[in-house]
Amino acid sequence: MSKTYITRPPLGWNSYDGFGCHIYEELCLRELAAFARTYVPHGYEYFVIDSGWFAEQEVMEADGYQLPVVQYADPDHVCIDAYGIQTPAPTFFPNGFAPLIEFCRANGIKLGLHLMRGIPRKAVEQNTPIKGTNYRARDIADVEDTCAWCSYMYGIDMGKPGAQAYVNSVMEQFAQWGVEFVKVDDVTHRPAEVEGYIQAVANASGPICLSLSPGNDSNKRYLDTYRNAAMCRITRDIWDHQDDIDVTFDSWKSWQGLERDDFYPDLDMIPFGELCLLKRSANFKKGANANFCAGDRMHHICHFTEAQKETFITQRAMAASPLMIGGSLESMDAHSIRLFTHPDMLACNRNGVAGRNIRFSPDGLEIFITPERQMDATGQQRYEGAAGGWLGIFNVTGHEITTSLSRSVLGLRREWDQASIAGYCLRNIWRGDAVVLGPDEELRVDIPPHGVAFYRFDQCT
Image 1 (cartoon, one colour):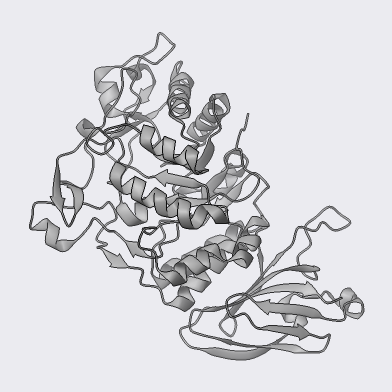
Image 2 (image 1 turned 90 degrees about the vertical axis):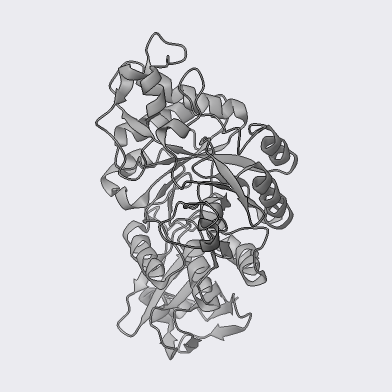
């Protein structure tokens, strides 16, 4: 039933952290140009437009941007076709998605869209027909099933005749547009609907990478269902504060080892660079009541220190999480670009094995190891004592830590391997220095507050 079309964690960009629910064609083309220039050469391929692409709203001009006057899309704002399928809003995408698809295909990029689960309320009010059937929107809608934070959709009763046909029609329309990534939101707590979208992806005429969201409702008892998608969020929305990093550590530990070659738990987007570009307090006085769908967050540059950013991206590399950049690509800072495009970070992520926590933090250090793919005699992935891989020593405190760590504490040997391994070569990925660690030697580390020592390790020959 599954058609995930991936073999490694997806790499790409999502518009939400930078532009909320209100990105439009001109901004997309500018961001696409930066994406093609800087990130595609390093393997990034998915360019995802988040929620709001279908919302026809009153707009104003401010700071060189086109801004909606209201923040959230009302049910009446949703543009639909004759079959109740959402369509691009003419104000934001006057040419549909054709110019974006053309640019994407010319530059090796795959376009993605956000989709709220269910069926638009407008379609139910109009009782639109379901394409290819004798059923209509009211036959499948569950009007008691609504989302607490989104007002324009009803849930679908997947047990009703016509329900799967409607979901199929949506995914097929996306495939015909040329969309190759779909992020379905508010769905992880609804396994029947998850299965419906998975089936619709399998039925579609073109390849679609299916992403499930949001993470605060993801439940491991539905893991077998989630694994028929390409990725599933396992955190709440993550932003640029230390508590977001802490939450990510907890989620990583909880889901470690549950990835597969065609399915990856998702630690959410990476909020580096310029964020919330369309939400500026001065614009409220000009008539834009609220123009970013992210609570009270305002336009700003990522709050993380360089050490926190290194921790953040190392988490995602070692956890084999999809890498979805969140900030504006056009204005991205040099340090963030270095982190996003570092070949060692990308090699760790593309290895596709989620690292495991081998040491908890009695002294403020958390140690994770991500081995290269290497099965032992029982057919299980080997972690401690691996011949090569990546090591993350995370300082989870607000003060600098200097200490020395043995090979056994680092997970670089198992007791019965000690005599057979003369030494390990360790290269610090973010700092560039290297060391050879013999059987009885310890690794000395000096890690800034909330920072990380990220190493590539190999057995010495």
